[in-house]
Image 1: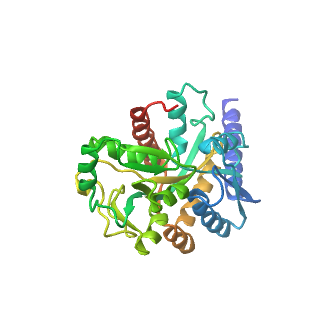
Image 2: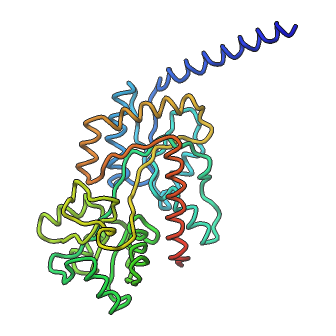
Image 3: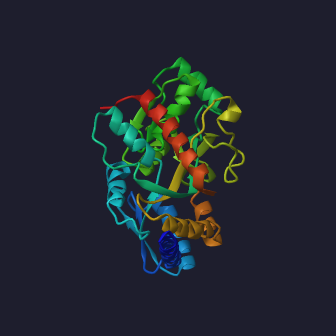
Length: 324
């Protein structure tokens, strides 16, 4: 009897294994939706579309970009968490994926999405901002800016895309590292903040390199530093903050997630295709053109990296504190 049970169990396991392999090999058998938690035109959208094109070409099925903006990204994250976990709804997540829960905690608001119920697939893109000033600005280095800020606390203004945004956090991390305070002026987006800097309405501006560089080439802006870990190939002449004696590093990022509960074999199939897409020449060229860089990471290393990101950015948010 035991032998019969063992044979039946072995047969069942074999069938399950065969089904699992067939299911993974069958993905994708229809179009896949890539949910972007921001409006068209921003960094997330500009990087998601070439990725969707590359992955769709390699997988033989269209990846349809579906923009779900609102509440700084929370609307798109919450929407994705409600989708069927079958590999046909994927999420293109930004830093806000780990910052929104901390902002909600310090603001005593209910969690808008279950951040623990997502399966990370791969890190695909990073984008370290740069610190820009107008070409006629008196500051030629970060050290000069810091010295002036120490002499005139809160007198030097900077603009961002909003409170706790991907430009607000790195600037506050820099200010905390340097022991200075600036005047924060939030705008409705990175574009309006750049326009305000060019118009002289604010003094300095953290900006995505892709947005700032055309103005640098036009002779309107000068770059003082970069939040990257090492000098970027895009801006090799711009020293990092660490090179200039300030212990601060920050990068915007795009990570591909699946809803929690997506079968491991399907997650593996998605990851395998994402790996190939990250090496696609058209994708790499498109990412470079918008001033970002392809940086691939997955597995345990990605999980550890995301936990570190949540800790470091959470620390920065708590130091800023609740903003009414």
